[in-house]
Image (cartoon, rainbow, N blue to C red; front, side):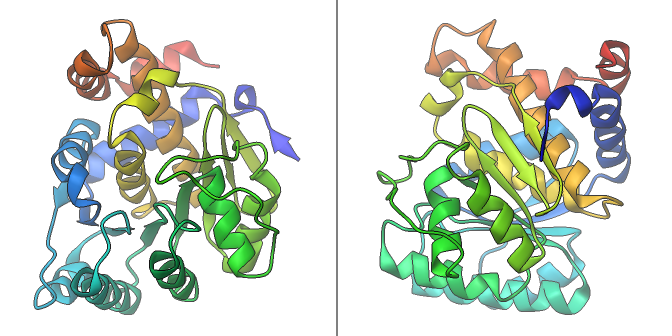
Length: 274
């Protein structure tokens, strides 16, 4: 059963945001090279501490001391994949939660096979669009894939991918967030929906990738990973709504988006109370 956002109170978002800002989690980010600066600034605005350590000689040592790890396969090549696998192994050995962002999985076989192999390495959370989540589930024999993504863009709505997300969560033990006009976040048994955000966010490179990094920050030391991932999605969507009020288009969106993330205070969210 899908739980509507009205049943995910802003007070819970406030609690999760307060926890993250109090802990200032160190997030090890192995991400799309196109979005590294934007991702780092988003994490800083939220209250986390980003680090982009990518050399294969360093990633294992750093993943072991980080509070969370993000693996984003957006710009994947052999050396980067080697670093990612080393970082995942070290994170797992240290008990560090890691998040998979399967960018364009289902479109190209190299990244699809790489992400499929990563599923066996127990990600704490998976965040993708409808086509990506369906492709991952299909790769495990959990769904049929009739929606091949158009590059990094989805051809499947989040609603169309909901059952695949739930099956993927049950099979992997990960919290799965499938994002779109409505975000659905599930552990395979319980599902939250987040009906916030704005279409302009899809016109700015990196909003989805940055969201995955924020998901990593929120799962660090999270007492409830489903609530943590949902709070991350809700926070980014809410900041996007606020930023659009100050933006004329995608070119003027980024600054007010970062400002909104920085300004949003847990006490303001508690006053909303819904």
